[in-house]
Image (cartoon, rainbow, N blue to C red; front, side, top):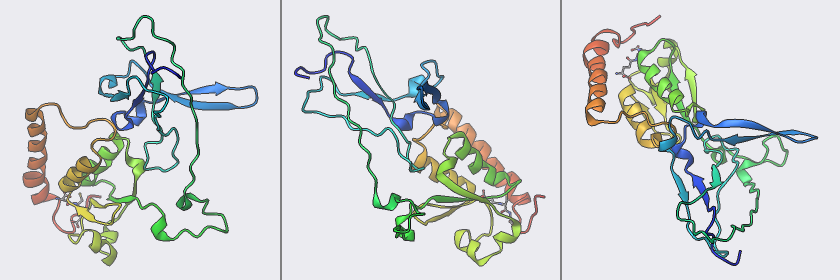
Amino acid sequence: MDHPVNNKPLAVCDPASVDPASYLTYELRYPERTGETYAMDSKDKDVKKHDWYYYPQMKKEEALMFYVFDKKESSPGFVMHTGFDHPDTPKDAEDRVSLECRSIAIFDDEKDSSSSSSSNSDSEVEKKAFFFDMKHSNNAARIRLWLKLKGLDYMVDSKMVTYADLQSEEYKKVNPLKKVPAFMTAEGHPVFESFVIMEYLEDKYGHLGPDMRLDTPEDRAFVQLIVRNHDLYIASPNCTQPNFCHS
Ligand SMILES: N[C@@H](CCC(=O)N[C@@H](CS)C(=O)NCC(=O)O)C(=O)O
């Protein structure tokens, strides 16, 4: 530790650049228990999209801090990390010497809710966004598919509402047009119209999971054209009339 790291520096991967579905798990078998850990496949099709960072020539006064487990569902959970062979490693570089220390942080609002000493109020519990979905709804399916393909459905609570639900006073506060889909952000802002919800989701969470936007402006325009045609000329005049029933 008395010399800067010149050999096998530690690199960390930005979890937002990795599709969570691509993580591999493998078992660690001990005589008395079997553990599990995560790994990444170097042959993964999205490997070039992964953002890796390292800090060159770290000194003993410097520390890299990252987390390896977080029970919060809205958190990416862990940060992949590895030592790697740097192409500019000097021939006579000394071996890396490093010190690893693991700490557990427990926050007040994370206390076991079954404990009698728990005093969690609603404001202390982490609020999730809420997606109002409907079976057979073409417009709601856009949101459902986006969340699923991005691997982000776990971040959002959702409910399959019925036509009767759409008429309630409660639902009117979410979407006064009494239609699905609708979305309530984690901060309590209602968003409706499938196109607007999609734009909001891309804006807010697009950087997480696999990139769903096509590569070129022309391809993106083509997709928007299909969506606009559906919304303006196909769906609106026909199946979005009030009280239209899909099933
Ligand atoms: N332009 C709206 C259309 C929404 C819409 O028409 N949703 C239908 C289900 S696909 C609905 O809620 N129909 C119930 C009704 O209009 O009474 C969007 O894209 O979100």
